[in-house]
Length: 223
Image 1 (tube, helix red, strand yellow):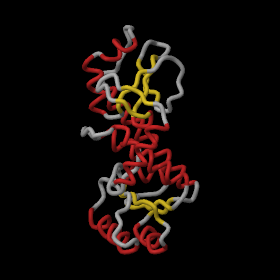
Image 2 (cartoon, one colour):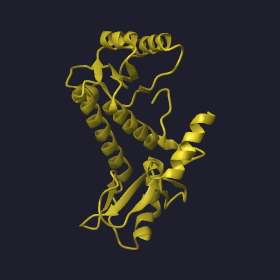
Image 3 (cartoon, rainbow, N blue to C red):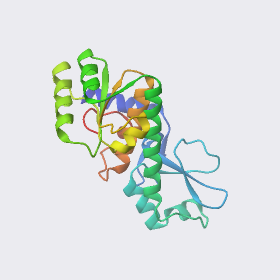
Image 4 (spheres, rainbow, N blue to C red):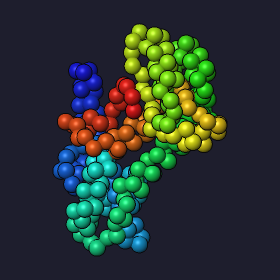
């Protein structure tokens, strides 16, 4: 959409661009992962972009990280014999999942999450929902009904629907039992959770977009 493309262009201009050592793509830091060398010579993912030392940047996708490991790109980039885990892509995914679930827990503590089908349905009817969360291993019937309720309430608009986590993961994050459906209400904590989820979804995707910098913005629809 033109308005969204304009917003992405403004964002790209307002932040420094980095170059991926594998794809040579230039993008903002939000679309990339920074890596540094730890005290023991091991390559460490600096997800918060705050660790000291020289950093290398890669597009934040698992396939790109795997290619860097395969090509020995970290040793060449750091110009040193560094230690790189063969399971680095999976280890980074686990860290991204952990950050998402921590953000969801924070949103719950901030009072910006309701869980349970009927509570979610009531929140949709009240018009205070900014996103839906469904367990990846849950049934499709409840998700479909809640999505339909959202579209009825908001004139056919699609909602951000998160389907990245199992019921067990959601239950642990929300302090409940057998959580299948949850809803996010408006607030900074909910937005932070959605942002982390978008990063995880992009990381798991192996499809490059026309502009990696554009991946740093939200998209409506299923995540």
